[in-house]
Length: 505
Ligand SMILES: [Zn+2]
Image (spheres, rainbow, N blue to C red):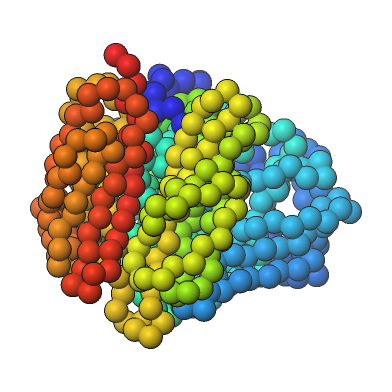
């Protein structure tokens, strides 16, 4: 991926902006003469054996039938790690894996994805966030259609793709040490978490809309809505009738008040770790709308942020080694790079470098771990033109004989992530979880001396000094891998990596 910032291209979505606040609200509710932009997809919630004929955005029709659902759970927490559906579309059948860094696929004259299945709403600590009462949710777009109407949606954080940890749709939360064997109630992360450096990353409005709540203030008249105000949260209602939540904000911009309108791309706050963040600094972003069940439910936005990032920043190549893994010592884990993407179509090379110093090639590789810890395996992808990108597969390994002795986890982030030049000062922020022993050791990956710092180990999740902070300047252009490590009192280590791209002046 190339982390260059190119100017946002604002297409004309002016009609709605010209309306006054009251008219805006009625436009959102569909009462105005101005047609509001419609979603480009059609949704169906289906039980196994059920079919539906759907009218697509372009007026065409498609018939979809849910043939089968297979949910695979891990042996540690009994959490769904993969949900696969078999669907028949216009008479042809195919398999789809639900969410967890998957994008819509083209099949049988449509594009299709499966945002959620029923296992993700059972034993969920967030109840039925998806508003799903059947076996699976299916979305269909016409073949060749964009996923979100161009000019109506942007990437909500001003930072590089996968700049640090993420928790995208339906992965159990893990960055803050949430994967605890004793806890069988799973927080499947329904929204999109963008890790980032606390207090430094701008959060922008993903779409035009009306601020319904900001901090503890809320507009009257939205009792039947997903809006639940909190001091660190903004809710914005867009012209599609979707509610956007921006959460854990370090700061909310002063103008963002209930009744105000925000423009797509406008700065509305700064990324932080407030509220129920678990102590790791990130933007929690989600979209809620009415679902086929009649309930409010999450709209899986991963495809939309992927598409928005592509439109705004034009990456050539993106490595994807996510989601993370949770395993017992001695069990086998399969790392999977198949979701990596190249503008040219094919990835020429998949190379892995492991924490134990060994390496491998291939789209999928199998590993076992002999010691508990948090591992972070390096994936390097290269296309035929020589474009390179890195991503990192997090593997949390637990000793089945001591399931309560959980190893530490670690979150690291840096800022800025775009347009870095030799000599620029870069701020690194690191914090460990599940241990207050030891210190974080940073290796910037350029041969410079290692730096030792000590975070609070998440002793107090909202501590403004909870992250340890250091700065570094790279002397020469390069695609660097920085490493951060910290061990607990048992010698179990957490390791993480960051990709830092420094381009010539
Ligand atoms: Zn979140």
